[in-house]
Amino acid sequence: MNLPAADSPVIRHPRRVEGIVAGQATSDGAGVRLVRLLGAELQRRLDPWLMVDAFSSDRPDDYLAGFPSHPHRGFETVTVMHAGRMRHRDSAGHEGLLRGGDVQWMIAGRGLVHSEMPEQEDGLMAGYQLWLNLPAADKLRAPAWRDIPAAAIPQVRTAAGVQVRVIAGASHGVEGAVQRPHTAPLLLDLSLPAGSRFAQPLPAAHHGFVIVRRGQLAIGSRTVTAGRLALLAQEADSDGVVLDAADQDVEALLVAGRPLGEPIVQHGPFVMNTRAEILAAFEDYARGSFDTVSPQPFD
Image (cartoon, rainbow, N blue to C red; front, side):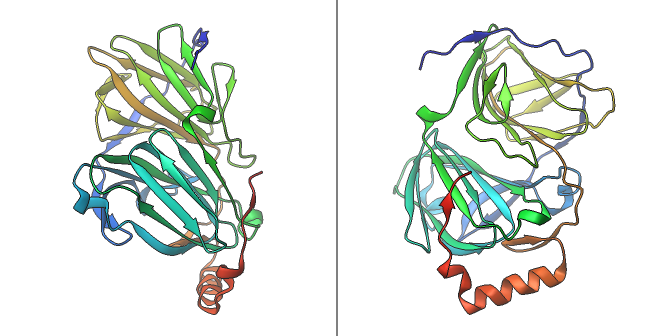
């Protein structure tokens, strides 16, 4: 794809790094090995983002079991594939295949049952799944999803040579593939050549973080190495973030969003605002009502 070159904005009060998270090795689904970079302990701090799981392995035993059919209610999932192939299906009969560079954005809403299964027997499987909260008024909306092939993700190249895949939000005048009205998520997939700098405006009230996939980044006075999540400080006068790649190429995700400020009650695959709503989700799932839901076109 021919990428336009764009000048970077001037950031006068860049955010500093409040903390660096190494994540917790765990497994999910039928035993897929992953690293949970954002979990329950950071949900309030990084509202509206609820969870981030990183998976990367060339050992089939780490991923072949996949994520058999399971329910969700009350939030959105974003799957960013960097390598490998993952087939997803839902209880209404829809399915799609994600390849390296593709993204799936799913709005679980009032509930659906789906599966995500690797479609390979060897080779590297790598990517991220992020959970994004829904406001209370939308938690029982009709579910929806959108498969976004790599070629359909808008891109921009900065004057410094940084390649930006704009999955959600906007960067350097380019609108992303997805816009969500209440949480205003920003999700940028960045490739920074050695010696380059990337600047991105961020509203002071929005929560944000950076995940380094490869190499190491300098953010202010802190260095963030591969596999780590950098929590960006919340300061009233901050107007953005500045990322520096020193002596090596870097790949990273920049993630931010407008906090909802609502109660967060999670139990497994359900995220609601009250315990009563969680119990209702379990009851609806047990009755099989999730199986009758057909996702709508993505809005």
